[in-house]
Structures are given as C-alpha cells and as structure tokens.
Length: 419
Image (tube, rainbow, N blue to C red; front, side, top):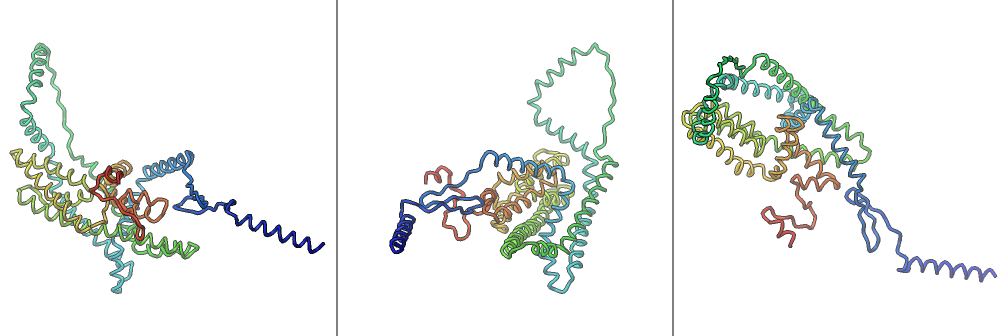
C-alpha cells in the first residue's frame, strides 16, 4: 500500500513538473523599470504603460506652480541664481589659487574685490558719456524724427491735405493757448533710488558669491554625506561636475569673447567717428550675452544714436551696419570655433528661452536665459526619464555606446521619414 502511494505521488509530481515546463503555460510576467516607467515583459509581448489624463493634469499643474513660484519669488531667486552662476565660473580660479597655497576664503575675497574693481572702473568710464547722451536725448529724438520725416515726405501728402482742410474749417474758432512743460528724460530722484537699489543688488550678489566660493565644497560634501548609497553619491557628484564644467566653461569663454568683441567694436566706432566709442563697446559686450537678439538690439540703439549725431541719414546707416557686421563676424566664426558644441542649442530654443525667462524675471532673465538653458540641459541629461527633453534642448540624441545614427542638421525631415 505504501509503495503504491509513493509511486502515485512521484507520478503526480513528475506530471506537474512537465506541465510547468511545457510551452503551453508561459511563465508569469515580470516587471522591469525602464526609463523611469514600469515595462511589463512576456516572452512575446512588451507593453509600456502610457500616461493617463490624470497624470498629465498633475504634471501640468506642477509645472504651472513652479512657474508661478519663479515669478513671485523673482526678487529672491535672481540674486541667488546670479551668485550660483558666478560660483560655477570662478570656482576653477579659486581651485588654482588654492593649489599655490592661498587659503580658500582669501582667494574668494581677492576675486570678489577684483570683480568690484572692474565694475567700478567701467562705471566711472561710462558715467559721463551716458549722462551726456541722456541729457541730449530729447533734442536727439527731435533731430532723428525730422530726418525720418524728410525720408517719408512723399508718403505724407494726404496727411498734409487733411490738415489744411481741418485748419480752414477751424479759422473762425478762438485759439486757445496751452503751454505744456515737457518732463525731463532724467529724473534725479528716480535715478538716485535706482542707483541705490542697483548697489544693494550688486552687494547681495557679491556676498552670496563669496560664501559659495568659500564654503561651497563643504556644502556639497554634506549633501553627499546624507545620501545612503555609494552609487547615489557617484551620480550626484558626476552630475554636479558635469553641470559645473559645462556652465563654467561656457560663461568664462563667452565672457572673454564678448570682452574682445567690445574692444573691436570700440575701435570700429572710433574709426567711423562715432562719439563715446567706449560706450558702444560696452553695449556690444553686454548685449552679446543674448544670442541672436542682443546684437540686433545693439544695432538699433547705435542707429538711433548715430541718426541724432550725423547730418546725413546714410552715414547713420553705415555706422549701424559697421556695428552689425562686427557682431555678425564674431557670431558666425569666432564663437562657434571656440565654444564648439558647448552651445549646441538651436535659435528657436534660444528665442523661446529668452522670451520665457524675460517674462518671468524681466531684463535679468533675458541675460540669464542661455546659462539657465545649459543648466537645464545638463540636469535633464542625467536622468533617463528626462533625457528626451535634454535632446530637444541640444543634447546629442545618441549616447556613448548606443547603436544609432543621428539626424544630420542639413537633412530634410521628409527625407529622414522616408528613409
């Protein structure tokens, strides 16, 4: 009896084993985390869970809340962001000075004082010519308007005829004299208040930058110490180093390029006889931090100033053309050859970023748009879930080791789809 029971049990276990190993019963599905989402895999089918309308709504609300926070807290965030970008730019210099035996706090203080000295020298050189242009602004605008009216004289025949008809109808009316006191272009009270606010802003940025340079490494070490695993520490350290290298390299190189451009523009403006050539060189240096938009805005300002100074309108056009050609040569040849792929961002993305940050933070946001765009690209490239966003912002679609062929920049999208 016992022998028959044992044989039946052995037969049952073998039959169950055969059933489990038979192809008619596939193994249960497994779940694997791929690109930040769960992917359900079976031997024949792989299904990726698509985002639902609820998740899309949640993400949209989160983005809007972040944008609202950036807009409301702009007075607090702008100095912090500028100080952080200055820290990323100046940290390699502090590290080199520390290698020569200089303490970190002393090296940071030397760089901050050097920055203050440069700003003070530039402000001193520009104060007198800027004030002169602001005082002459009303007369300059009137002269420029007269010149433009001479050019548009054939187009104003109908307007003058209408004015004559209205004047003939109003001859019998008693004229009323009205005297209007034109406001000054420069209000001394407003100017003093704005100057005080600007100095306070510069002081806040300088203090924040100093403490970031002197204690930034200690703060990073504390953050790394909080993380539990060695892998997370390596990921955070690698991402921080990549962001610091990209942003610091871009800001340092573009600053040197723009300073060189300012020197060249100063020489060109002096050669064409433009008054206060140093002022236009500084304008070229500052406006060139805004790709595509800055040089055009600087050209417009130079044209308006030249039209108020020179007698003929043709000379004003040639002066503005000389300014634009200088910036165009720099933008087409000098910057691409030096920066290479550091600024691998398309014009559309740059213009959208400038408009977005300009809407949130005003003029400081316009100047910070491209550095913040590079920071966003590097941060998004560190995670699989956000890597497609980094590709849109200019990151290479093919990662190192991936077997893929990127789309050529000069290849039409129709040909790519057909291929």
